Amino acid sequence: MNTPDSADFPAFVAAGEALTDLIRSGPDGWRSLVGGSTWNVARVVASLGVPSAFAGAVSRDVFGAQLAAANAAAGLDGRFLQQLDKAPLLAVVHELDPPNYFFIGDDSADLHFDAALLPQGWQAGARWVHFGGISLARQPLADKLLAMAEDLKRHGVSISYDPNFRALMDRRYDAVLQRMAALADLIKVSDEDLRGLFRTGDAELAFGKLRAMNPDAIYLYTRGADGAQLYQGANCWKAPAPEIAVVDTVGAGDASIGALLYSFIGRPAEKLQSHLRFAVAAGAAACLAPGATPPTLQQVTNLMSSSTGKNAA
Picture 1 (tube, rainbow, N blue to C red):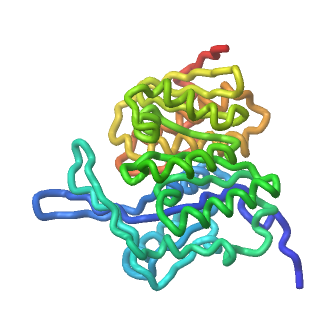
Picture 2: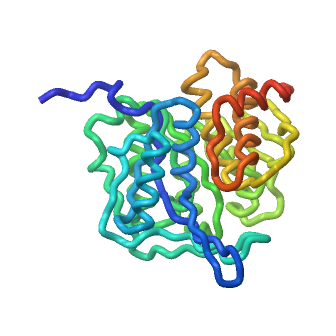
């Protein structure tokens, strides 16, 4: 029996949830869009040019079929997507301004993901594996993903983590936050995430608490229109957001962390300031189209050339 070569597997994998957003489009109308934080990150990295996969489970019904088709269209490795005879995971967005939503999926397919069914030897090809989103707040999936992250860490695979705060991440999520933060080599967080995760109005105080959980990690701290900062130890780099005509901010955070991971894998000779500028440009590029639309490499490089970042020690 031939042993798979590491080159047979994607360099980047995102593990977690892929779901369907049901969005109110009028008093009596709804529209569906494919989504999910970790799945979106996988699409971003693939769109920029790194072989990628999404490791997770979806249903076999019309919603799961739509996600599977979008997964293939994004160029993600289909061996990592599991389709099961279970209900779909739905996010019902019943108010838009501000967004108000709830999740449907008490025994949905995502919860039945089985890491043991992933292609044998895939870990040898993975350089980064990303975790986050609501998948880490939903049991028993959260424990499965934590075990997977811990195993990858033991085998020297780099771990990325974006908690991507949602209302269901209450005090019960605190232990998950601490475990994932301790494991991660890279942590992405926004000011809104920090206020929600730490249940405080002081984002800077919350950021200090997060960094104390793992002082050795690299932190991408995004601030929307104010750009972002990258932290490593005592060093901090800043990059302003490019001036653009915003169409939709959905998926901007996923684009920024996905682009940073792409840059680490595909542009390894660049300095951290350049990696940060690339991530910020990608977050801005995602705002040029409606929905969670992954930016193209050309869009990102165009925005990088029109904006300059400044290094701050």
